[in-house]
Amino acid sequence: MNCLEFRKALLTDPARQSAALHAHADACALCHQFGLSAARLEQLLGEVARSPVPAGLEERILVRAALHEEVSMVVPDRRRFLAMAVSVGVAAVGALAFTAWRQRDAAADLLVTHVRAAHPEGMASTSAGTGLMESATRALLLASGVQPGPLAGLSIEDAWSCSPLGQSGVHLKLTAPDGPVHALLCPGEWRRSVRRLIRDDMQVELHPHTLGTLALIAASSPNLEELRTPVLAAFQGDAAT
Amino acid sequence: MGTHGQIVCAASPADERRRAFEGLVRHHGPDLYRFAHWLCGQSQVAEELLQETFARAWRAFESLREPEAARAWLFVTLRCEYARLYGRQRPQGGDSPPDQIPQPALDDRPEAWALRRALAVLAPEYREPLLLQVLGGLSCDEIGTALGLTPQTAATHIFRARRRLRAALGEEPGRQDDET
Ligand SMILES: [Zn+2]
Ligand SMILES: [Zn+2]
Image (cartoon, rainbow over all chains, first blue to last red; front, top):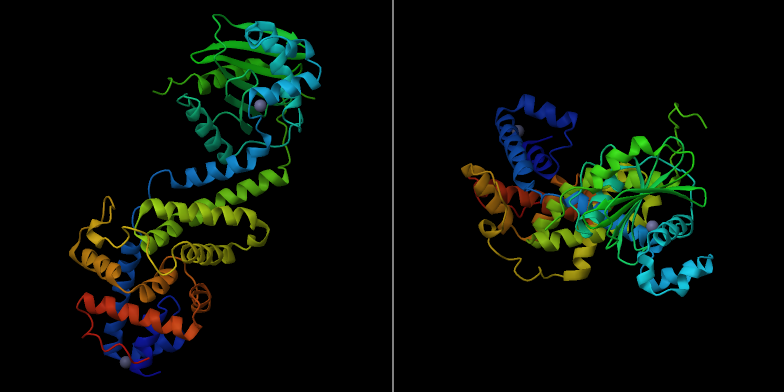
């Protein structure tokens, strides 16, 4: 290897340093110097090329990917949900005016129906949550006007934008030791007190929320005691302005 | 079902795919964004290029299992997407001088400033292959593929790019860089 070849190799692909390159640098003082200055340039080039990246870039990409994936799962509007509710036998509700949806028991029925019917994989627990679901959940909560509380402690298996009672809200499926627990934020469903009831072998808890109602729904086996506090904290962050 | 034991659930294929995709975004996203920003000079366009590239990656995910190959694939795809959308023209406003490109917290050492400026005014035919190597870690073969050049031409362009940067920093006599 001569001096010209040495310099050309170093400026073409400095990361690939062959034995011949090292041998030449050891034998030739000028090329040794050249090698040092080339290394300085490479160091500086790496720094300069790596300009700052905008905050939240990865999250925005992940949220968009997650939302694309969920499109087929979202129940987009009241009419479609009504059609579905009728078809699965909540026909009595379907016959009523929308104002009747605000009746508390009807809301519980509709939510149980929604959890059973709107998400086809139903009540089967499949896996633990991921950071991806956490980002998607955060985006969904923000989109609904809720500043998300701590989400890290929740094992979020899936997150959707759903409107089981008309207004678009957030539906989370959480993994718990004895089966999934669903948390649904239903904006516009105002209530003053907590209500607990059993509907169709499902536990239903309806909590007051600054935007309406936060419902917890599970089959009979999962224990809601342990999840209640973290779920309420995740949804009860200050309303975003 | 026991109430005390934690159930260890097997991750579903969909969940595994999501997790692997998240790894891909976190691992390659920042450098890919930087490359996009050097290409187009605008943060919003750069982010759109990234969104489109990762949307393609999600659809082609099965063929991206090799982590090494994935990086080259992402850089090549982003470069193709840029060419498809903008052809040979940088997007509107992308030709602003380097010191007007909004970049917070830039290194203000004189040599860093000089190098950043030299890189910004370098002709795209030299800057792009250089950045594919520096940011993407692509080989000359891969860079050739991305830019429609032979590997030899890609190598020559990279060599000239570095000579020009060295000249801008006063470490090279000048522009006698047309020997190959
Ligand atoms: Zn020498
Ligand atoms: Zn839902």
